[in-house]
Amino acid sequence: MKKSLLALALGFVGAGASYASSVTLYGIIEEGVLYTKGKHQDATVQLKSAHDLGSRWGIKGAEDLGNGNQVGFTLEAGFSPDNGATANTTYGANAFTRESILWIQNDKLGRLAFGRAATLGSGLGSYDMQTGYAFMNGYGLIGWDNCMNNFLRVNNAVIYRSPNWSGWTLGLMYSNGVKDDTAKWSKNQHYYGAGLKYAQGPWKSSLILEMETKNKETDPQTKPKYTINYGVEYNTGSWTPMFTYRWVDQEGNVKGHKFGLSAIIPYASGRFKVAAAYQFGNDERITGRSDKITHWQVGAAYEYSLSKRTVIKPFIGYAGSGKGWKEYGYVNDGNIYNAWQAYIGMHHFF
Image (cartoon, rainbow, N blue to C red; front, side, top):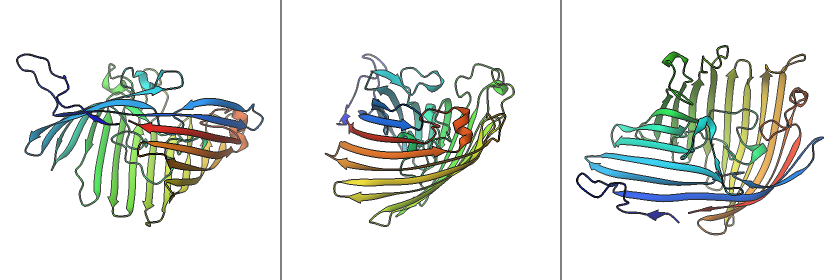
């Protein structure tokens, strides 16, 4: 249950003390049982946290400065409830692994934010703009990032989000150092993102352009990675069909195209989610044979609401790939050769 904590002691007693006008403690906890069976691999059964929604707890607050101005913050930490470990630690994040942001906002000019955040095309976080797929990040083999990973979270970010202009929103993001920014500027690992999103009536759509350069001290020969993400969805009133597309170009790694069709169909006290996606391209890490790759995935889930804050979710999905990836030796959730997954889990918002 969300709890509004008025006058939380962010300030100190004494002269000059101040506090946020409102602070909220919130979170999600998810746990389930996951069965996976890949071709020529042993079947596994595991207690699986964050198969769909990442478990987290956070604190966020805002202060009204008057005249349409606000200042606020978000501090959000990820964790794995099955073992208590810290989650989402990519690029060395420690306490607040999912988001750590200070922002200032004007009603007419938009919001400017600073810190650690999920990228525009990640499908995660406060500043994500991605649309068009029912299983954006979760559900393992059927997730949109399966076999074509996008940028996830970056440190040292500066973010701009525009006001809503008749349904249109502009997002810009830059990271001065995806991991750290202690080296010479030209040698840091930088992220650049620009997105345009439309949400008006039954329509949602987005176009996101992203690029990440590599640290030239640790990866002097690695070229930048580029992605384009496009999505569109339309709520007919009885169901929501979706289409999404991703293009990735990363020299020395995966280059290719991915297309996804999916839908969300409300039923009883829950909703069905179904999806299929196909990918083709090249993986330049494959040597001694053709580097052509193909990949396909299908899946379905039913998310049933036990209450306003608790949802139970059965799921089944399949992913297959051409022999190029089989011979390269992929045997994990990201790139697995001909595998099934079945899952039953539950998440709870608080």
